Picture 1 (cartoon, helix red, strand yellow):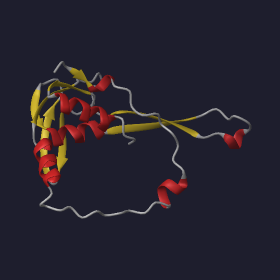
Picture 2 (picture 1 turned 30 degrees about the horizontal axis):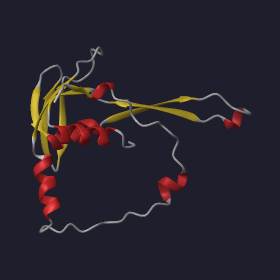
Picture 3 (picture 1 turned 45 degrees about the horizontal axis):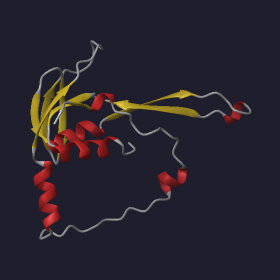
Length: 146
C-alpha cells in the first residue's frame, strides 16, 4: 500500500450539537458473544502491526512522546520517528482531536451569534505501511464525528 497521510485527510464538518443529542439520547449496551467469530476477527485485526509516523510540530511547547492508551495499556509514540504499533493504538491516534471555538457573526441580531467549532487532529500522522483493509478502516474512523 502506498503511504497515506492521515493528517491531510478532511475531517467531518463541524456542527453545533443540539441539546437533545447531549441529554436526550439513551445508551444501549450490547452483550458480546465471545463465541462470535466476528469478535475474534475484529480482535485479530485490531492487533495487526501498522507502521506510522507522527508529524513533528512547529510548537516548541508540544510533547514529543505521545501516550496512547487502550484498556489500561499505554503505548508511547515519538514525533518524527517511524514506529510500528498495533492498529488499536492507531485508532486512538486517529480519534484524538482538538476543537477550538470562535464567536461567529450574528446573522440577524446580536442574540443570534453562535460559537463556530473548528476541529483538527491533535497529533497529525501518516501511515507508512498497512494493508488495503487497514486503509479503508482508517478512512472510516477519521470520517466519524468526534
